[in-house]
Amino acid sequence: MKFKKFTALLLAALLVLSLAACGTKDNEKKADMSSNDSDMTDEPKNAEEALALHKKLLEQENAILSENTELWEKVFMEADKGMVMIEDGKNYGEFLLDTVEAAKEQFTDKEYTWLKESATEISNIENKLTALEETYPEIVDDAMNGNMMAAPDDGSMQKFPAFEGKDLDGNPVKSDELFSGNAVTVVNFWFTTCNPCVGELAELDALNKELAGKGGALIGVNTFTLDGDEAAISEAKDVLMKKGANYQNVYFDSDGEAGKFVTNIFAYPTTYVVDRNGNIVGDPIVGAITEEKQAETLQKLIDQALAADMG
Image (cartoon, rainbow, N blue to C red; front, side, top):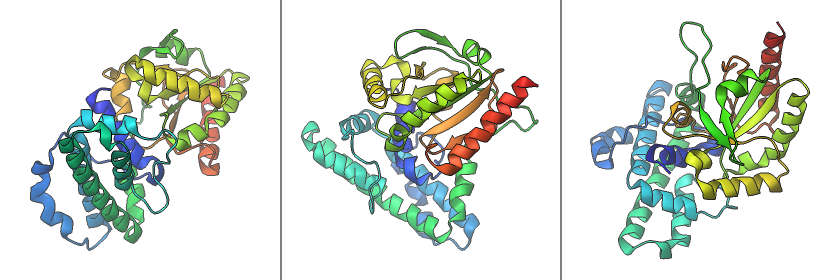
């Protein structure tokens, strides 16, 4: 996997249940941020200061995950595919610690020591983030809203990024042909080890069948499969088959316009509704559509796109 994609996926795993926002993706090293350590220890006096501290902590965590990305990728790929990302009473740093410990034979002594120290630091940061979110619950939504893709300021609709890729069977797919051929297209971003993502696959397949009767379609984008990763494609096809999901899944290059778009998705699953002209309708839906709120929001956006197409 490419550097930027893997960093995003690691953060996505962190945020898959908490739905916290991600900080900036600068490739800062921990040493560069050490000057801010004193700021980290100051207790915020209000929600505004809490939000600023929340962002700094996430930037610090991202800096750790941005170091030694090949080693982090090895850790992530060693994770138990059936393991819940964030178990009750545990945070993402502890998930990483458990994964590193279980796969310790795969690392040199130096790598193992570094990973343990880094995962422990992430765990400590996560504890601080949790404390902030419990004291100032409003900052979670504020942080998320500040980092999700926003619509243009001029009132125009945001275009879904163009791509030329393939589906998981190797058939070519072009976004302009895909969107123009449907009254509405629902695009669901997921990855194979994301339990909420996998948990909604059957519902997404049912939705695809429903949309087909209205001139629409649903497609999936498994972010592990970007760049045509053969092992990831095989795993994704296996998961889809086991869940009885037959709708089209596609992939494209991670360094293209759509690939860069993926790096700005930090909570999974995330779903977009796209109209026939390739415009994104409304805001992205964060979380599985098996949840009532997400399902209702998705249906409203679908109905909005279909009504506009009829008009």
